[in-house]
Image (cartoon, rainbow, N blue to C red; front, side, top):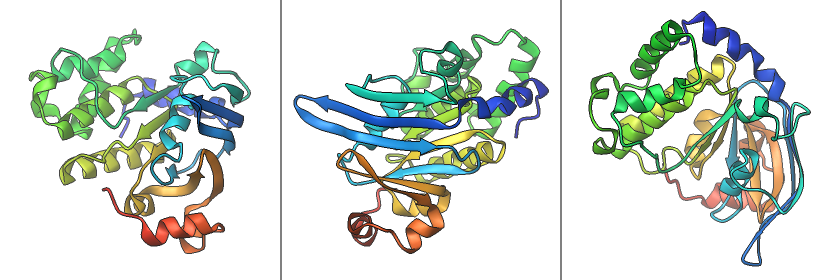
Length: 254
């Protein structure tokens, strides 16, 4: 829980990046269509938006386009009416990858790197203590980050992402190769951050995980959004045959 008033006040500004609109997004690599005239609007501040679909559907590509890591060949992107070129928008979102990337520093220094632009040192120190406790890495702060387990590295990566104080966090299969303890920690942290008002957009293969976390579901197939509805409605009665097939035969990846 965010006890620090400095970060609480900043988090209130999450509405400035919503709605996130993608219109007619095309992305091709080696003559293969990755995203095919994809359009979607994410406007619901409350809860967690989960992106589902088969392997190769375009889920990860969508996150990379939304965060600016990949430039689409065609299409429009806006965030609360602003373009991604706005520094305000660039600094308001972050991406947690499936495979965590650790700096050649200690666990503590990796987390503190997220506070690099925070001038209020007392505020950042207080938030640092909150994050290492919340992500259950307090006993690891002096260890080299690259020496801890993958599950622990992902918790470090999540703490560092939260230290950046993003309005929107994109997570690309963040728990797919983690131990059960780390999966639970990551899910618990993200649910708490969502409850505090931070917008969460989470890609997963796991139907069971989606059932645990999602308030709404975006289902992607062949580079297009084919369903976008409340999670309860999607899991009860999907409107497309391909989504029904996915739910009936999905292999759970954790």
